[in-house]
Length: 436
Image 1 (cartoon, rainbow, N blue to C red):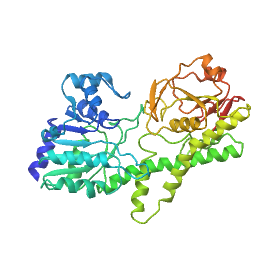
Image 2 (image 1 turned 30 degrees about the horizontal axis):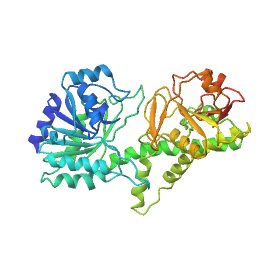
Image 3 (image 1 turned 120 degrees about the vertical axis):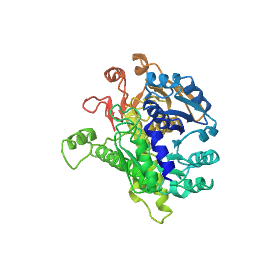
Image 4 (image 1 turned 90 degrees about the vertical axis):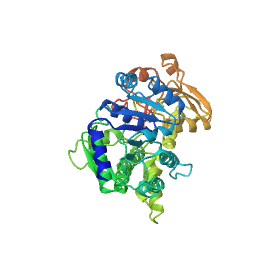
């Protein structure tokens, strides 16, 4: 055991460790690049041939990627990609960064994790570190992943090392990145934790050990459940302020002046992204199996999932005041990504609002300076060119994503009605503006 452990430590220190990253999305791709930046050779593995080809041609499909670092990594042959899992037998460390979505019934879908684990088991060998970064419920690493690997005849903590270390990627965040965001990790054994910490400490400023993979799995769910619950609270406050004829943005900004005991959260048209709308359901599902109902989690999910309908009702009310109905009205969805200044459409509430409006007979178009087109419900949508003529011929503009590059004064000057779900016009008085 000591020989394998110290051999790996030496490889880590001397940059001789060969790394495979399974899953080349918003988590795996930046992680692979970070390893390369720190002197390691990395091979990315993904079933999506387009992603594999893009990386090998040094063509990025994510906006947060440093193009010069990326091209240098590929040109120097320190980064490559493949859809062939057999390369696992030639590496020392495997990082699993595959999606963990929800099924239609809001149950966890960990099929991607299990498939990745099955592929690793086929080619794993003695002396490897295996790290799961995909968000999942407490118990996954030990109860589902570990038994698969031990079927190979290898013993965890002796022949290989298994760690859970949840990703903390925040697309579009200019302040916090992989290097300066503390890394949580918990190994199946103490040796697993030690080698995991030694490894990550080479690329990340601060590594935080926890007692077990279950604790690390729970940390990730707590982080995103915390956000989900607090966003649900301010979303409900927005509904209350609407009933009380109060400006919710004024109320929240004033509350922010308190220097203690308060943390700022803003309401919006719903939850989007790869974590916050999904991860709390993993926790709720797990607790149901233990005969416990996670009431805050479920209530927050209900409130947040109802926000698109609340926004549609605001649109209907604003049109009614103009003696118009939703049916037949021209509505412009302004921003379709789930978050400002990123091109990520996953779980975007703007898409829910668009779908509801079309079902009610609206003529829906969209404008987004980052996304030029997308497919939804087997239908193709193309971004309109922002112009005075477009705005004047639209019955209602709905700001669902507040991208920084937009001239919002131009929009206000030329639009007929604006339903502002993001507080773009929170300090402006105008009969045109309908606030959340």
